Image 1 (cartoon, helix red, strand yellow):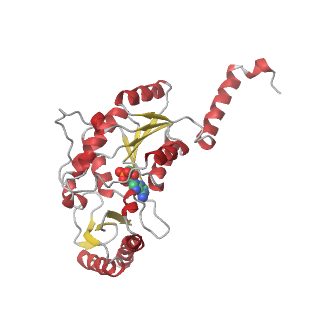
Image 2 (tube, protein in one colour):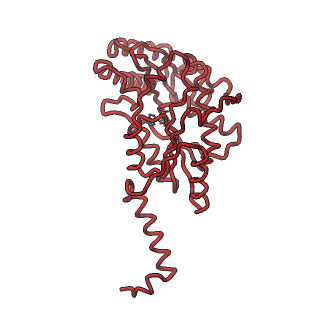
Image 3 (cartoon, rainbow, N blue to C red):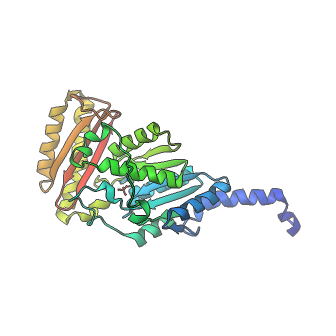
Length: 314
Ligand code: AMP
């Protein structure tokens, strides 16, 4: 047994600190006080203190209405970084006029409780005026990659995403930033932007988290009617159909897409297909022949929600 004086010996103290640190990473989530920042200055101050302590920083950018998909990113960030910043900002510049900005679900209290429970150190919830100065004239846009898939029906969307993500990278200056594979095109564009602008942030893309019936978790699922919700499982079903067809043998992409359209028409009649595409996973160029490896992606519009999903078939 240690005498009291020995317990304060620097070596014991160091061991105790290391043990508390490891233990804290696994058991004390929810007890560690999470800070909440609404201003850029607060974020910079908090991150500077973390950096001064020699700790690494992970950033998880979100628009809130958090679900297990988002929490999986926080878990990954927490596993790989000492300190996790979660931004919650429904970014107006990535919504085109007529899109669902006003209907976008907002569940701030539950989001903060979830972030705290999963071990985030800081939640950043800026107002739009904090992020966008009225005199601002600069946007960030990546060429070509936004001209396909979601970018076709959402003009300006990816410029809004890139601009806000670049700003968040500059505000937080994380070592790593975490994105979901569900938004596949977004992850490709953000990787490109980060490389092209020499931003010293490692981009980590995490797998899509799904409901039990295969539907990809999404904040927008809350805007589905019960009938639409039960039909929406067919999005994943149609991707599995494509995987079955492609794994057996190479096929003309058009035939696979036609089979997916038929499947969706039967299983999800309330939905309207926006696009189904089979593309190169790096360039996002349409493939004439569907064969492994392939990236199959789709978007389907329901009455109050446009859902996207994809499958990387290896
Ligand atoms: P959002 O709040 O929709 O902007 O999403 C924030 C981040 O969470 C993005 O990087 C998304 O790709 C990611 N994300 C959303 N849904 C899922 C999911 N079901 N599985 C994994 N990541 C997700």
